[in-house]
Structures are given as structure tokens and as C-alpha cells.
Length: 208
Ligand code: AP5
Ligand code: MG
Image (cartoon, rainbow, N blue to C red; front, side):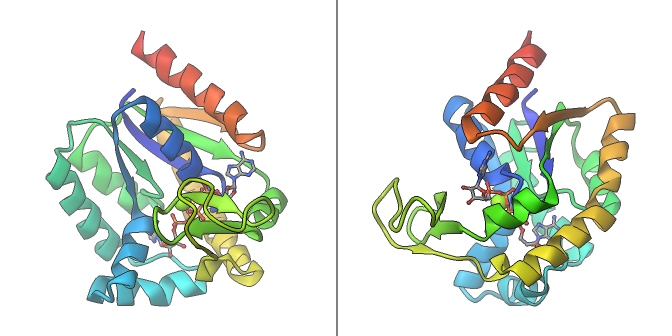
């Protein structure tokens, strides 16, 4: 199962698990949120457009996201292995993806809203290497020692909007992929290494 979609609410641990999967399997990791933040850092028109939506906890319009992902898929070849993290997030995006490539599986990371609000209240990201960690345990990046920052959209009010958007616009994808026999669910309320053990079981199982 090497053409993967990582599906889950904001803060479900998609980025954390993607980093662990990448250490084991040589897969391209495409996080649409990371691409927007990178564009914003460089003040590109795409970054500035996306910022308006991200700050409000809303989705960037489908056309913009699909164009960007289409270009990425063309860049590394849609038939090679990849993990899409944070895409698709609407049925229109999922239909677009279906027209571009055949997926091997979708991993759904299940966590309660309350656990997510708690997690995101202490998330920190490294300015230098992008490593995701939390302020409860670290004040510098544990991977490279550089400065950590808090994402603009991690305040409680924006997190609540992001959760609402997830339930309304992204949750329909659960049935979309279930109907296609692609959905695998993982209890993402466990510790990161326990979640990863479940992910590995799925990936190994599918390879055999
Ligand atoms: P994006 O960057 O994708 O944000 P998100 O989906 O809201 O998800 P996060 O990155 O916040 O969480 P995550 O699941 O990666 O969790 P993480 O591993 O960091 O998108 C941002 C915005 O961009 C969107 O709101 C939207 O505006 C726009 N956008 C992006 N894609 C789009 C699309 N396709 N269409 C339209 N708009 C789009 O973990 C979170 C925290 O929890 C960390 O502190 C971590 O250390 C901790 N943690 C992780 N796992 C565990 C665990 N098992 N136990 C305890 N703590 C854990
Ligand atoms: Mg992420």
C-alpha cells in the first residue's frame, strides 16, 4: 500500500505519523498545509491567498488546492509512492484525485475533539527543520536545537473552526473511501509510537 492518503481531523497526528512512515519507507510526503506555510514564508501570491483562509480556520478554495496538488503529482509522477497529508479534504478534491491516480489505501486517524484541542494548545514547530513537537516537553527543537514557533491557526478559537470544517466538509470522505474499500481506521488517541505500530501493521499486511 504505497499510494496513501492520511485522513484525519486537525491535530490528529497526520504530520507526526507521516514523518515516522517516511523514515521506514521512501515515500514522497505531500502536506498541503506545509506547502501553504512555505509559500507564505516566501510571500508568494499563493501563500498570501491561502493565509486569509488558514487564519480563519476555513478551507482554501478547491480550485487553488487542486491546481497545486496536480502540479505536485506531475512533478514526482502520480504512479510512484506518495503520502498525501491533508489532501483531499472535500469530495470535489477526492474526485479530482481519483481522476489522477489509483490509491492503494486511506488511513483514517480517529481522535476526539477534546483531545485535539488539548494537543494543539501546546503544539510547536521548528523554524529550521519543520519538526513537530510540543511546548509541554521542549523549549527548543529536540531534533536540531533551533527555535520553536506556534502556528497562527493553533489558538483555541481557530482550532474550533477547523474542527467544525472537518466535520462538515471532510468527514463525508470517510464514506467515500469506505465505499471504495480503501479505508483503514486507526485509534490515534494512543501514544505516537502505538499509533505508528498500528500503521505499520496495515502497511505490512497490505504488502503481503
Ligand atoms: P494543515 O497544515 O494540514 O493542518 P490540519 O489538517 O489542521 O492538521 P495539522 O497539521 O494541524 O495536524 P496533524 O494531523 O498534522 O497533527 P500533528 O502531527 O502536527 O492545514 C492547515 C490549513 O491549510 C487548513 O486549515 C486549511 O486552511 C489549509 N489547507 C490545507 N490543506 C487543504 C486542502 N486540502 N484544502 C483546503 N484547504 C487546505 O500533531 C499535532 C500535535 O499533537 C503536535 O504537537 C504533536 O506533537 C502532537 N501529537 C501527535 N500525535 C500524538 C499522539 N499520538 N499523542 C499525543 N500527541 C500527539
Ligand atoms: Mg500537519
